[in-house]
Length: 293
Ligand SMILES: [Zn+2]
Figure 1: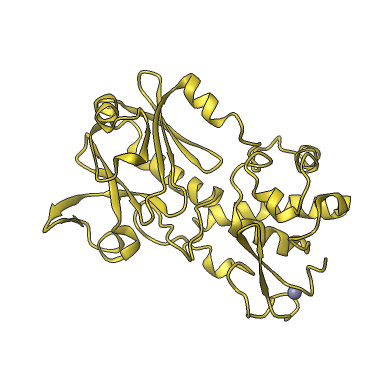
Figure 2: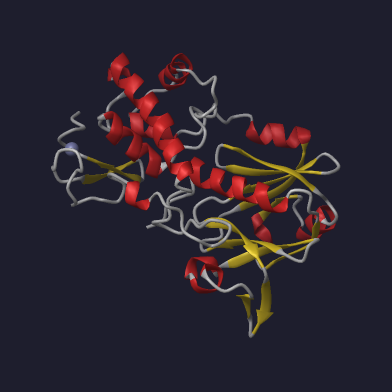
């Protein structure tokens, strides 16, 4: 079972990259899966265009990693289901890319599915390990980038994302609260892991219809959302699945997880057994006792 990197995992990558690769330039790029590059359509063109571009800043919008490059270009990487960026040095040996750096980059199997490698001008490489190869990579100009991000909802951790704004966004949609929280047009960056954790903390059932939520429940969801996302960023993300930091190390949110993938275990608040129920192709994990419908 896989879980897509969400806001805290992407933010972790972005912060770590900003500390390491600002001011560096792309020297070259390799892939064994050119379909991953969506723009420009041909990998040869992508390669030609990215060479020599300097990294001015790295940001995040929702689950997208955005490299601001010289000459008004942007490199957008959406890691999708199983992708994560790694920074290191690899060498092609005996038909495989092998890490020259000992530790998790060499040892953790999740760091070995390298399908895209950028060479930087300081001889280090930025690699995308992606088991399922769903990641999306695009080299865009300003207008294309704006168009690409246009439909995304607000950033939940922006200071001006008030409770009133949150409520306004939520009430635009019909349906069950878990699905609405994961809708990227409502709020950007929340997925399966953190919607479960937020709703557990707020004591709201994931299947509760938006129109049946009280103001107090919405307030609790809003507060839990800010608190849990911040806590997860501080812990550097959740690595129960394949997400890793750019060093290849795991994030530290796992022990802080209360319900996500804990079905059959006891609720840490009341002791009832945590349930898992399918909701629109995803699974909701919740406590049937403290998150009553
Ligand atoms: Zn409980």
